[in-house]
Length: 184
Image (cartoon, rainbow, N blue to C red; front, side):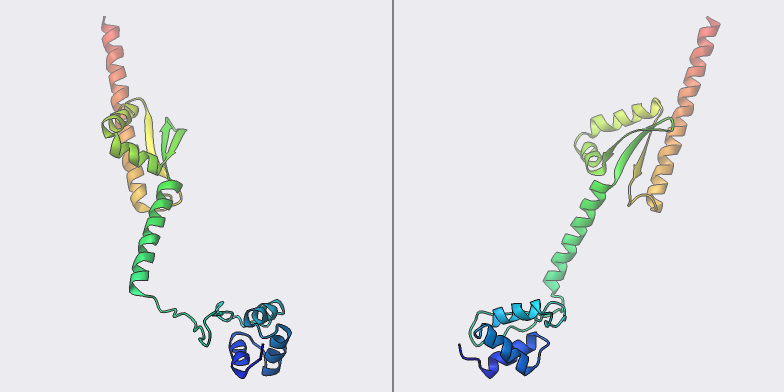
C-alpha cells in the first residue's frame, strides 16, 4: 500500500513520533495504520492523553475525533439513576439488621431481607419483633453505612430504650407473679 502524507499525519496525531518514525513504522506494516498503532504501542510511543490517542476508523478518508468529554444531560441523568440504584443496592446488601439477646449477638440478616419481611409480611414480622422485645431481644442496624450515621444512632438508641422499657415491664411482671405466689 502506498504511504501517503495523510496517512503519516494520522499516525502522528495518535502517537508521539516524528514524521520519519511514523513513515518508517508505516513502511514496516505495509501502510496498515492499525498495525502501526499496535507496533508503536508495544514500543511505548503512544501518547498518554486519556486513552484517546489510539483511535482508528475503518471508514475511508474519515478521521475519528476524540469524543467529547462534556457530559450530556440525558447521559448524566441516566448515570445519576444508575449511581443512586447502585448506592441503594449497596446499602441494602452490605448493611444488616442484627438481633441481640441480653447483650449477646444472636443473628443478623441483610437489610434487603428485613425490608422485604416488613413490607410483605408485616402482620407476622412486627408482632414477632414485639414478642421478641418481651423476651429480652434487642434489634439494631449495623454496617458500613450505619456505624457513623446520626440517624442510625438515633434509631439504635430508640430500639435500646424500647428494649430497656420492655425489660422493666417483664421484670415487674415477674415480681408481681412472685408476690402473688408467695401470698398463696
